[in-house]
Each structure stands twice: as structure tokens, then as C-alpha cells.
Image (cartoon, rainbow, N blue to C red):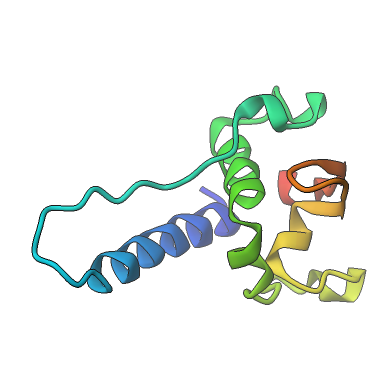
Length: 106
């Protein structure tokens, strides 16, 4: 498992724990991780390993969260302003991507 995949899993677990702790009632809650549909991925990503596709799908569905997390792998030298930019170079209309970043493939 790559460092990026491990980080993503830990991030998702921490987010789920925070959301669960913020509830104001004692009723049972189901925490779900939101992923964009696989159909939103670029065709080049369709054949990527499952964990890579899930990382891209998480990034697409959770842009606001990932924009708040700085790049941690040193790719800020490549112009990445946040962890989201490790997955997406340029956004299009809301909910669409013009150019995916292949940095997160490896």
C-alpha cells in the first residue's frame, strides 16, 4: 500500500470520527464515505488499481475538504496548492474536471 493510499484511508477514518463526535443526539448514525461515481474518472484512470480509483473518486467528491489539506509529499514544487491538486489540475463547470493530475497514479 502506498503512502498516499494510507494517508487517504487515515484521512477518511479521521473525518468519519469527527463527524460522529459532532452529533448532538444519541441516536445511531451511519457514517458513509462519499465517492464520486467511477464514470466521472478519465478513461486512463479506469484501468488503475481499485485503491487509486477510490482515491480519485474521493478527491472528486470531497474537493472542499482536500483543498484545506496541504500537499504532504513535496509536489508543492510542481505547483500543487493543496492535496486536491494532486488529483485534479483544472476544474470545469461545477462537478466536472477538465484535466486530471496523473501524479497520484504512482
